[in-house]
Image: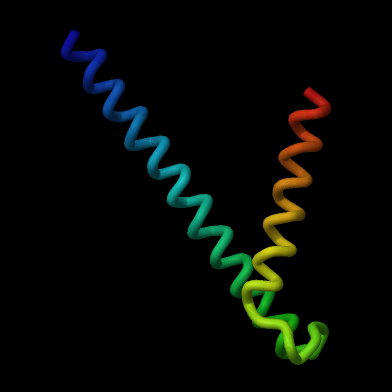
Length: 71
């Protein structure tokens, strides 16, 4: 029984770590993408970080939905 509880807590920690890693990597990718696009003047002057973040969320959600559809 003790082994099961240790394994259960490890699974929770692993899940939290995976989600935190996903959020951090998404934020880093979006920040770098925004910086590159801003420096090369490829986005309109009126756009800010949240416009790019929305576009990347839509792309990621579309990929996830397509993956689920093709299962």
